[in-house]
Amino acid sequence: LTTEFAGLGGSVKFIRNRAKAARYWNLFDNFIFSLTAEGGVINGLGGKDVRLTDRFFLGEPQIRGFDIRGVGPRVLRQPIIADPDSPDANNPLPLIVTDRNQIADDAIGGEAYYLGRAELEIPLGSGASELGLRPSVWVDVGALFNVTTPDLQQSPFPGGLAFQLKDADGNLLYIDDNGAATIDPSSCATTTCAPLNRTIAPFQETFLGDSASPRISAGIGVNWNSPFGPFRIDFAQIIRKVPGDDTKTFSFNVGTQF
Image (cartoon, rainbow, N blue to C red; front, side):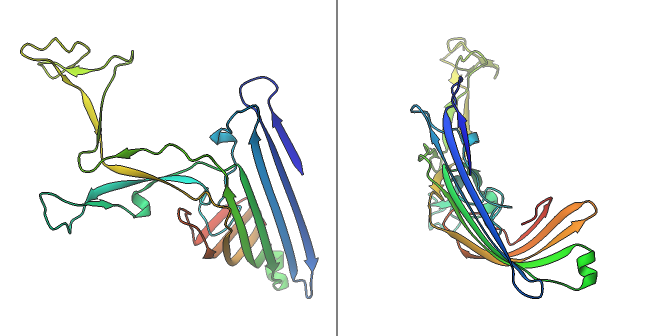
């Protein structure tokens, strides 16, 4: 059990509590079964919000089967494109991109989490043991949650979101008769100078993953205590996830043992 307190001077004020417990059993023929449980909560003090950098994050390697920071609250920014199957090509319908590789994924952490693990280590022959190889089967359960819903942005389809650029001093920029940037909108000869704009392509933001519902994965893995340090390989099957979670079937970690 650990408690961390921030608040003696400065603007950052919070109290963070964590607890962790583990138990191991030597069953038979050198089969070793283990249970591990942990959890944590962080609270802002004096009306202060908990900063993103002080929140908890959850994913690989803590809970296998999910990517780094792949579990918990996140904001997905999905591009909006013209639907190629629109009946009228001159007036296309919007199509929200769902390909994860084309979506900006920002994990924003949570103020509470829990994590549990059950693992059975399988003994090998003396030769494999001397090499430091230890295979296992496992089940991981966990969740990350409890964060204030962030303000979401949107760039409308089809034109996108346009905004006027500013210089380093905060002055609005315009385009003069020579195509150069100016802060004087009256410098053009025949008309008021056009604003110097930048357009952001259409997109929508969605807030997902803020759920205490357990994420569950199971799989097999191998620890290798190599001369260069511990290595860990895992193959995972997702049993339960919630929308927004970022999964990962295969993982390879250096310096991580369970």
